[in-house]
Image (tube, rainbow, N blue to C red; front, side):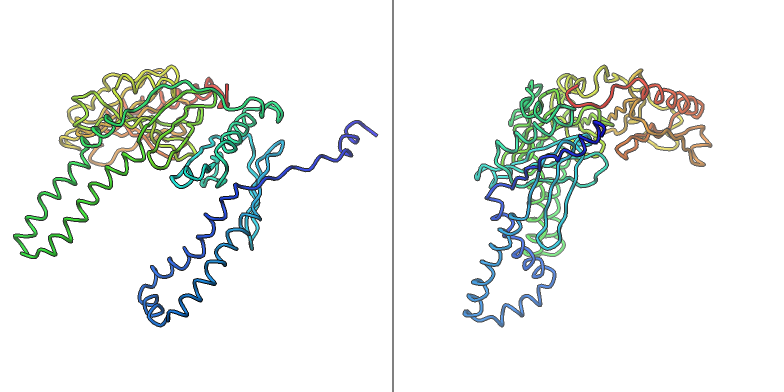
Length: 441
């Protein structure tokens, strides 16, 4: 018998499966109640009729049945949920009536995020969300103890980097070096200086008086003014709560982002998966020299890197996302005849191509500069309609791996044709020379 046969004959030790935190049944017990609430919202008239038929005895009896049933459902769903980390995959088994087993290959894991909603923080638990290449929806483990969640996250990232199972547990969470922390005062001021906030406030000031002059109805004015005021406050307050204490740190497993006032989130920007970096510059921020940095990450929901920061600080953070990339200072405008196709707006368009990135700018009041590394370009296209052909203009589109497109608008037709062929060659050589997407490289 060969050595291979002996190895195959040796039985492998069973994989130790683990359960979620014992507080999880309380979270899942709300599912039956949610179903009833959804039915009531879907058919409010039928729900109201049924409620009017109920007597006090029937209501108490229903509660006496519903509460234990919800508790039993939460307990059983927790009892039949297991997860295990094997030599090659993370295995998650869920389902009470319909069983589902997810096999997540460790080498395909690109991000593991830890989130802690407010009630979860009170209970000392956290939610683990796993980002996998090619998957539209993230798998999650909710809930785990905070220490257990961080330890499992560190182990998964180490295993995804190629560490052996024993070594992965010893590696622990990689150290991080803080790059940026957004102060709450600066975040609040930046939200007050955004056009959306001012637009909502102006609508609150202007629309109610006009409605009063037109209708002389106080209820009509209140019915319109209160939602407008609530929307203005909710949008700014929601962003402030979500982006509070925004911190960006660099670690061997990528850039780590921590943020949130009520619900804390611990996210990871996967190394090598960033397809596009956008520098956003609202009109009222320019005098202060502030910018916002957004991302397109392949297969991930991470979309914000820096909510607000001085331009020099933001560019230093971008240098860690795109090593060796320098943000172009002044993209070139289209020729003046582009004004025939896009009056006024043409002045906001721009293009700069360096050795490392394709950079396209658009916008006058709210400027956006999109940076696409040549290695991330999937395809290049040239388009021009009849009116653009008349003025010898064309658009150059660059498609990325995140399913997004960056466009250089209204370029000279000859320059656009030359750019098309040159960009295709840059993309080919860029992919050939790009560093591999590896964890903890």
